[in-house]
Length: 332
Ligand code: KDO
Image (tube, rainbow, N blue to C red):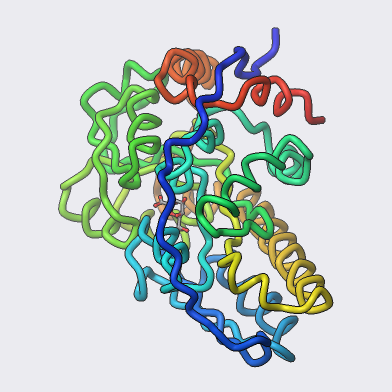
């Protein structure tokens, strides 16, 4: 039997009313443009490293990447509107954030949908994505350049009770990012989801404001969540993806030759980050065990069954573009 999430669903066209655009730049040429990028990740996160070491240098002849990590310029979840309003040039965004403005994106917030990093990359490049990408450009003024692999999200708890099935997470206060789609994922896992910004997770775990959080292993190490937690439950409930996003207005001001260089720079940065995240995922289990954490695999089938059933029955599924689920599952 297939593990894939299956069902025909109706696509209700996006409810996004459109935002007012203010052109941040008015000169005819994009020569010498500063691209301010705001995102919540740390500067040592492999996606940030790839942007600084691969993307920035590749575009330096005609643009300057100016990254603001740790959400220091815009708060997590406010970056897309900032780009749409002409107040920011770039971000590293997520389907969960896009879904708050364009409901069709919620298909990629579903747990146990994408199979792995390779599937994720192929799906993003597939023509099945054309409509969502175009709607995002037309309605939001945001162009998605490339897909970045964040990793397989795992449940990371400060409590000691062993977790085998979703029922074992009943009453567990699980920190999730603050969008509806993220909170639904926490609920589908069986937990009691609480919204907390990424930059506040460490303190929330330390003080016991939450019992746990979910993120891929490289993030658990990079942001030191292992210092304030006791176990990692390898649910692998979401093959998480982020997108390198740029203002379409800014993008349109570059020449076709500059756009080609920038597109390649984004793809190369994404590839570099993906390889490093995958390597880290493969080696970090032993790192956490050495640090004294319990790391184990629960009854993943039980999690998959509940999470997939909850998504298919959810209000989100009604917004998924018709036939898209089948197309995603068919990408090999
Ligand atoms: C998080 O807040 O848990 C999350 O992992 C959600 C992702 O979509 C992404 O925003 C990520 O944070 C940040 O890039 C920090 O790693």
